[in-house]
Image 1: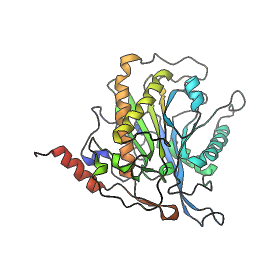
Image 2 (image 1 turned 90 degrees about the vertical axis):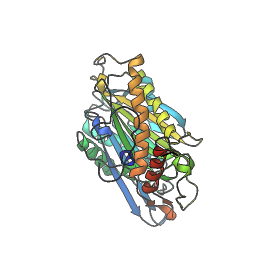
Image 3 (image 1 turned 30 degrees about the horizontal axis):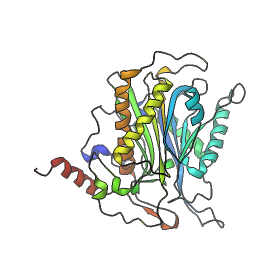
Image 4 (image 1 turned 45 degrees about the vertical axis):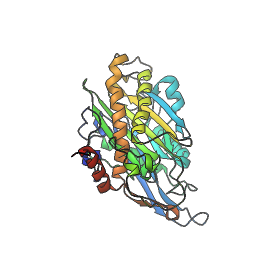
Length: 365
């Protein structure tokens, strides 16, 4: 972790399962994530390109996902958002590319960049078969001017390179970085957050969230309704868009596509714990990937899948890690001033810690 505070710094733990060594998606073998942050202050269009508080975040799943696809599933809680590649994931139960995250009106640019990069790395793409990169988005237009697409192929390539270099590491950035730079959640600055859990069977579940949803008065931390108790943040600017949240679940367990879809659906329970109601204009899109049955393209699964009650601990892990990752995205984020002076304030940590501590002590302490 590179600076910032996390849920553990509040003196609370979420759920009963232990966290991984880094309490991030990096704890899943061969998985990494990285960012490119774009922060610019140019004249407004049409004279210039406008204010940019945006970027790209990439989750790399290890190895070549085209030649060895990975079992995957997806779930949509509210569909006012986009994730390319979700249709074949739901139909065929596999993912063939890294997962790219960005802002709404840059999705096409990131998709094009992903194709260019992946075709350059794997000559079989477009020869024996085609692929659909997985690119998901949230709307950062409260802080970043969307009228100009600021992400380039080099930005996407740099985020992917950093994701691959992070595999097996211990350092990562959360909050207002990469695709999370311009995101806001539950009345405060949101962005990228991550967490992990270790399962009794020896597997790991890691979650990465891009948070951009919700109302301040619903913010809940460790069961404490802090949003209605915290001081007004004094944000400037017009009302924020309804927002969205992307959740990426990754595990090394032997789980098939049906099980992955079931895992993905549980992410909504974790978001609800922190205050999400999946509002009308929001896009809550969840992906789950399980590397334990990964096999070469066209080959049968490499093992026997976990099914039925054996999945219960993994459901528990997804709910807890999603809740913690979403909170980590807020705790790690710093105040950001963006387009037209619009401001998204950092969650006030000292006030938050006091409220949580008072709730733990109880009225008779």
